[in-house]
Image 1 (cartoon, helix red, strand yellow):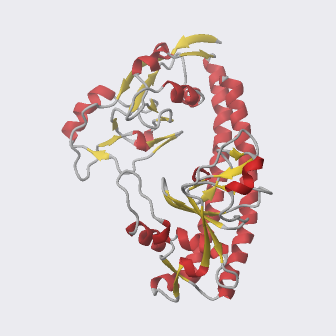
Image 2 (spheres, rainbow, N blue to C red; image 1 turned 135 degrees about the horizontal axis):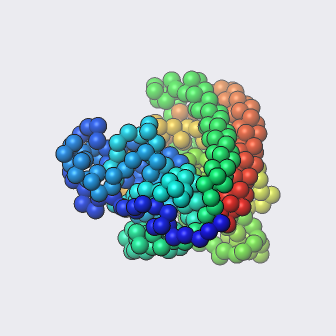
Image 3 (cartoon, rainbow, N blue to C red; image 1 turned 90 degrees about the vertical axis):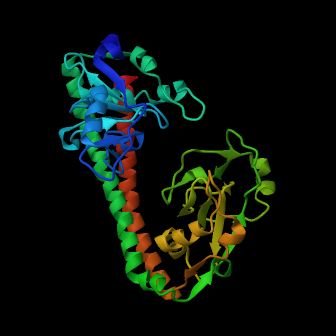
Length: 384
């Protein structure tokens, strides 16, 4: 192992255009920003398209080629990907840096994994007020311990194999979710299209609203579910927060949420929804979340969850939302929004299907968690 600064590992490090030219409607010359760069993945979703002349002018600065490493350095800092032949020719805005690895010193994908392992460093050292970022000098002066090329290749091969398995398991989990959404649309699509038996949410649910009530936090105690645990219409254990055990009764004075109740985020972000999983014996729900408790014999949680996540309801909700910087919806408006209420037997049929698929999804998720843990362990072993 030898220590070396990043600028010595590369033949060049450049950020993208600081004054990007006006875009055009469509062309074969895309300019990407940080929103197009993810770990080990570059997307061409909604780039800024340039004329050929503007593209060639901008590309004089970045000179992005296959095998270069892209790193987001403004906004969401620290996402890293390698440019491959499939991407085609691209140029960049200033939120992305392009690193040209010296092939005699480091392999592109080794550098990618190395930079991914330093994300905490990027987060702690980003500077700025409106948008935090990493300066190129900071980047170039970062010092790493690197091994020889043969060892790098061995490390990359091992990490690539595990990364491929992670992607396959993630796709399988997503396929299960798509299966549920497809079945929901199959049996309930007509109810939404034809507005059959629509009822206000306040007619079919009880609401528990803890907005405006900020609980005291503690290192340990009763788990606190917040809006940050409800993302992409899924429940995430992380980040973990707690309230003191002795404060539980006072904090939860407005009502007690139950397992399988439906959580709904009312802002930042607006409209995420999931059921409360059976993972805590005792828990409380924090701000920016409304808990919906379905009325027995009228509506079931599984149907309510997917009805609230449907495009029909989400569009209706956004029409009632307000706020310029952060969109939100007031509870008194939310409770008046409507969803179709199909026969309870049909809802129960859907709920049974959801439970069957959830069991399969849970097994795959557990396998994915183990694979991710192995990947994280190896990253720590290789890169410290």
